[in-house]
Image 1: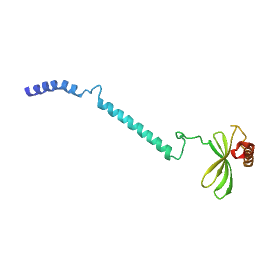
Image 2 (image 1 turned 120 degrees about the vertical axis):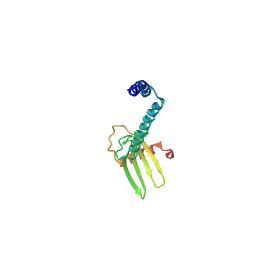
Image 3 (image 1 turned 90 degrees about the vertical axis):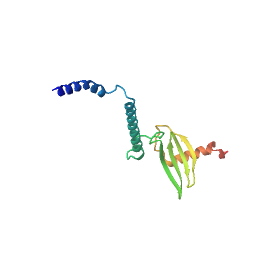
Image 4 (image 1 turned 90 degrees about the horizontal axis):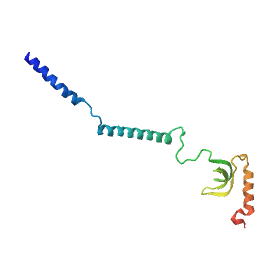
Length: 144
């Protein structure tokens, strides 16, 4: 019996020491750094997935930084003058531009401000006549 009593006494003495060793610390720098690392990895993964979606996704529903709206540049009319040559009327940022387009370059021939609610049905011929009228009135430096 003495052996059993001695074992019970030694077990009772060791129990408080075991409880002290198993209590977690209130704050651990290692756990804090590990949690911050996990948050940063999660944010980096989400940013990368968003970048992939915007770059290669079928649906471009997210605007790209620095991009213009879809209706900022509108081709209103085009008149071919030969192989790879022509005149083009485009509307860009509140201006109507008459462009001469060749294989080597693009030249601005005339421009006019547009009213936001202007009738959009102005024909190509009218745009050319308006541009020719502006050039003949002395707006062009070679006309004087």
